[in-house]
Figure 1: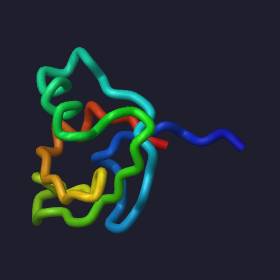
Figure 2: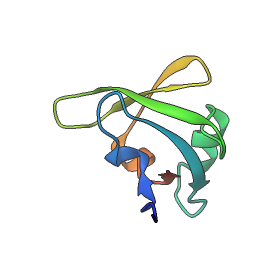
Figure 3: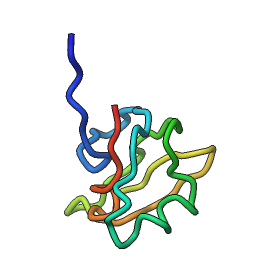
Length: 77
């Protein structure tokens, strides 16, 4: 069975995933890494706002809210 790689912004409420890759061509990639979104880390989507922007993730024991376009640069499986 082959798993399709998806973006963190596509996770459903309460869904957990492991970060596979960060798109370094994205302008916010450095900020994303600095706040703890690094390959190999498990994340969980904890909350979505009304228009899915921003999104709140549990990462490294903290709750971190990022914009949807920033979550788009995080590939998960």
